[in-house]
Length: 135
Image (cartoon, helix red, strand yellow):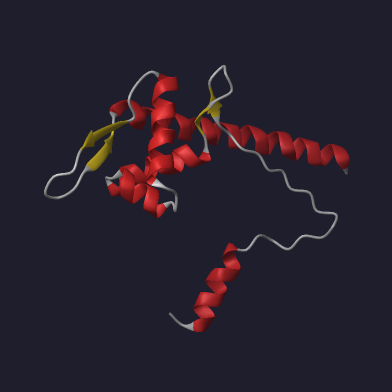
């Protein structure tokens, strides 16, 4: 890769320069149980997508730079709160273990994506109205 190309790509990923008068809205979306325990948020979402992509909980955890134990615990906790399994596991063997998302997990991710898009649009519209009111 040419140095200029790398620098341009790196610069494209940087947030816009802000002055002390710039205001940005930030928000997070997650689903939780009545108890307040998180079911799915950014971390669990990324973990499920990584399992889907890599076919293994260990590979997904490694790719997200988190421990296998934490990743396994996050999946187990979400499964307990949801009342259904998110992964189908095949232990060890000649080629090692593998994990696949259940149809329930795939439906959850699809619904979460759709919810996130709707929330993004609604929040963007509300923020546009907010900015107009404060000018």
